[in-house]
Length: 246
Length: 246
DNA sequence: CGCCAATTTGACGAACTTCAAGGGTTGTGG
DNA sequence: CCACAACCCTTGAAGTTCGTCAAATTGGCG
Image 1 (cartoon, each protein chain N blue to C red):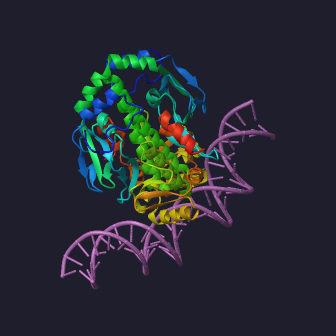
Image 2 (image 1 turned 120 degrees about the vertical axis):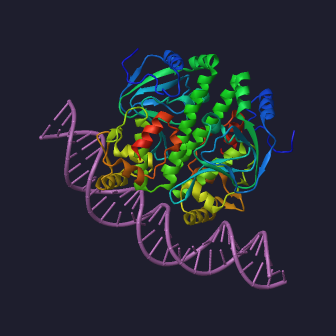
Image 3 (image 1 turned 180 degrees about the vertical axis):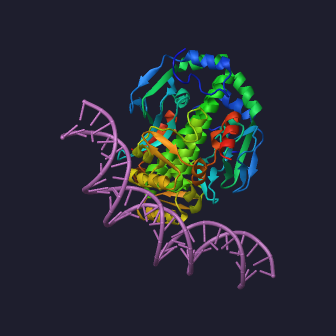
């Protein structure tokens, strides 16, 4: 249908017919340059985005304009399901690197829901997994030390990308600067810089040129004190991951 | 039908017929003592809880067993919608004070969804607002200083309870110890104790005997740098709140 | 009273922030 | 081709926030 890597990214969740239904409902792809505003807080939304390629971040800012990234979307994510039932968002969404998006008008989603209630239930499920990821971010920020927090975040991104075939045990793409990373883990960019140095010296991993290089996957998961239950990985992925992390 | 304060808590969301439908689907109330496990992570769930009275907390623990509370439910919350589409939870849920819950079997929700697709959409909406609250907790933990973080949290609980008629400008019930509060805001209980002392000395508010006493509502919202957009308050509540905080 | 849980206080050290400066890379225009 | 700007990464030094350990205090409740 087109030359983008992912048309529908949840092979374990949707059957062929559902995938076709969703795919047909999507508008043609739109391309965005790096670091462009995709959705502005408060805008009225009548369509939702499926992220074909690239990375997006959700963020809110405090009074001084310092940002906190509250969520990261990877290729294959339905990034905007909140907008469907809410009609607007309370936070902004930006592209990180270049991004390709396909919009689905909410009217189409209504039609699909009417035709196939189960499909709408599955979309609900996706948004509930997103919420579980949010809860884990709360845990990470509230209870983990800087060192652990960084490693833990890299673990999450490894698994989420691995489940889409976009990560290898040796590394994966992650188009973030150290300043972005600081806005994710709730630390200053200076401190993140030092912590990254620590992870590098410990032979765990690095972040350079928009890529995480993993030197020791097992160590990364141990240092990160990572648990993956909250990702609700499909059974097929879960098996491969379990083997990888044995 | 029974003598509990709230049977269905979203008067702006559900019409009478929907409320009746939901109410009829609920099993008889169950009472829980303070600090009892309501849901255990990983348990298979075939029913979801509506919180009639009392407070619940969701939490995850790190390797050393230190807890991080990742969500707080107040009377009138559908606490367990995640369980509906996921079938299990990745975190535990405990009662704080005594609590009264009415379970709705998932089979009943299925039936309702079939009968009234709009109703299921509204439940989805509720779970999306929960997710927005999660995102705000991420922001609070990542970007706000201890002082601000505490005041900010008290602001959220004030508004959520106010929307249910359970808070007054002078204060509201919040059955938390300082240790619980520490597990919410991601600080040590000792530090929370000192910060609470600061808020008291500044004439802002206190937490004592499971109640937040508010001395200066406007100051609390200013110090907390609070914004309420993420709560998606019903229009009627929003108007009253805007007048209150003018 | 005596016990228990919750709160409070002090002292010290660790984690983290801020300010500041320097260096590397890339892209752009003269 | 070089100069320059912009951006990102790195490092140092000093100060603040926050955690940990420990002990004392308070207030219910049997």
